[in-house]
Image (cartoon, rainbow, N blue to C red; front, side, top):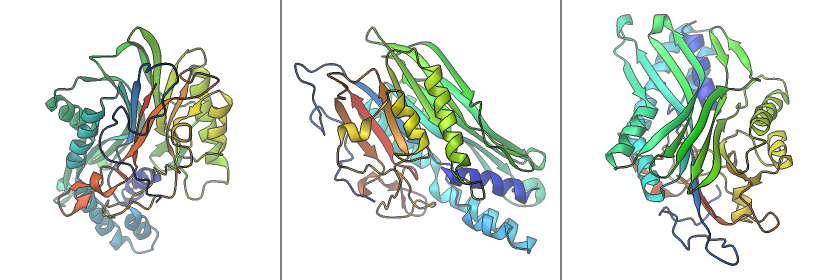
Length: 366
């Protein structure tokens, strides 16, 4: 999601920085939106993709930085930090952990897994923020008696400014249910092709994570990614080409794996070059395969998460699979969104908020 990129740019410069498908919010049950295979029940592999969302609205910061008056920069940043408090990841993570507990995915792909450390107190500004999204999620899962292990993470954007008083780190992460999934090998890495430096002290890099595993005696490779987001001022087609190259790297790396399930915020829509790379490599897009005729939009809520009804206009979050379909390429199973209907909202510090600015996806592939 490109708000995260804008946040990084804002901090650097300042210091230098719907469609409403009738889906129930309940867990996937045996008959929920089921596309059943002929000749038997089969086995389900359940996966989830969730962009955690950094939680800050920085549009006003960007607007302030574009004016010739430096006096409005810090107030705009402080307002963005105030919004970070209202969007309250420590509250949102509890709702996400509840969803994981209800649906029990074998693997969970996470994007915008942030570490936020801001301490402006040495500058005389009473602002202190310290949040580690992955640690908060793992703690929430453990309190629910779940054993989700980190198969791997990627180290993406890492910006440290003002002598370390402002630091923002972005990861992707892949979690697996340690009670049911055996990890044989795993890796997290940045993509070979990235947008690179865009401002003093800021270089935009993206990454992905994969894990080769065994589930019920069968081999499955799980992967998650957060490909590059659109960036204002970038040459037309450049970022789309970067996304296609990033997805191409994943496709080439996983070419020999028999069964692959790839999830993530891929920041582009069906029909894009990125989408074409996956389709040409034999990957099946789970949403249209299992919910034909439904748009399945996933992005985005208002930056402060205060909207009461989702008015999504993009489908950029996906669950792709290869080697799972059968009977001449037919995919069977169920898929739903999470965080798109009002009953998914939770109590925030100031008002009811959504779990993320993106809808999550949960699929049980048969």
